[in-house]
Image (tube, protein in one colour):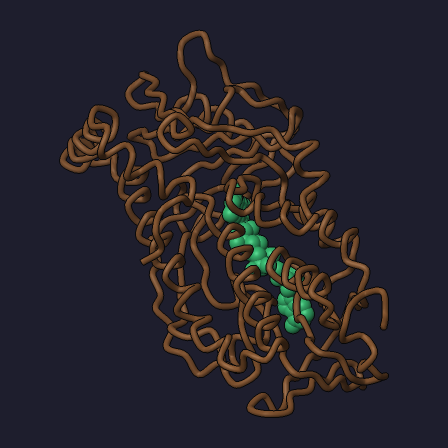
Length: 389
Ligand SMILES: Cc1cc2nc3c(=O)[nH]c(=O)nc-3n(C[C@H](O)[C@H](O)[C@H](O)COP(=O)(O)OP(=O)(O)OC[C@H]3O[C@@H](n4cnc5c(N)ncnc54)[C@H](O)[C@@H]3O)c2cc1C
């Protein structure tokens, strides 16, 4: 038998067990977990390796997700290099309110740039992967699926659709899509500057929300609420730093400026498909649901789906042919918990421009900061230790 596992011997040219479409956090986690279970995979990625290894997005990984990767030998470098954080600050009306969720839950976030996790997952995956693949077509998904691309054809038992929000897999699932548009933008910034505070800062301000999140000791992510129609050109660097100081700085705690290496406007919106599977195609991550980065949940959900999908496919190969029947429901339970939480946080972050909602926000904050029960309930979902149903 092949050293890679029990099923390698059945592979032949043009055939594998699972074709994974997309090499983001979802696809690479699925591929690694399946490979470790001895299931053959081929990963197809539209972009180059260099591009995906440098695409900066997320940075906050929940502890349960890190432990799931660690159990499978996928978190060695992360555990060596990532800082952890167990508290954040609200800054409102020039006052700081610290919220210590590690104290309430015993769990922390790991601060690790998404592109570093992608590099690790690529380095850990010894199976076949093809970059710069174009024109992917999925066929015969009900019974004997195959994937055609660039004049080639690969037959398989399953397709894992992990190609994100702009991929091709979503359109093959006849799902109803629930959508929500917040009607606002976030100017997403990466500054070559050390963090200005020791933890995440959520600035609630009449000019709009601002966020501060460490990425590495020398790079910091900032967000500024803006109009959904703004473009990066509307935000010259000087305007960015003036607004960040106005919305986030405290006396004696300046915002440390530096060159802005990313500046783009994200339109804040969500969507969720009501089913994630069609025949032998199973979606995972943003191909099935998108949650605006208000609560830093998207990559964590992608890893959650990936773990469940790999478990389901492994059980199927072990003879449990109904193992994937509950896959959508199991993923969507957590997806909707996180959507609801993001909506709740959005109400807190984005409403302080008119006096009435400003007072509602103050009342909500007082409850959160003064009631242990309210704080515990918030903390457990903020760090992902809640029940999904
Ligand atoms: C600014 C920002 C900050 C964020 N911060 C956080 C955070 O702190 N914590 C958090 O949990 N989440 C965060 N997120 C969300 C997180 O980045 C995403 O949820 C995550 O990337 C989803 O992973 P995925 O694997 O589902 O999709 P992706 O990462 O989008 O991966 C999909 C892959 O499929 C490839 N692909 C697309 N189409 C095709 C095709 N036709 N054929 C082959 N390949 C294809 C793409 O190139 C890509 O590599 C943030 C997002 C942004 C934009």
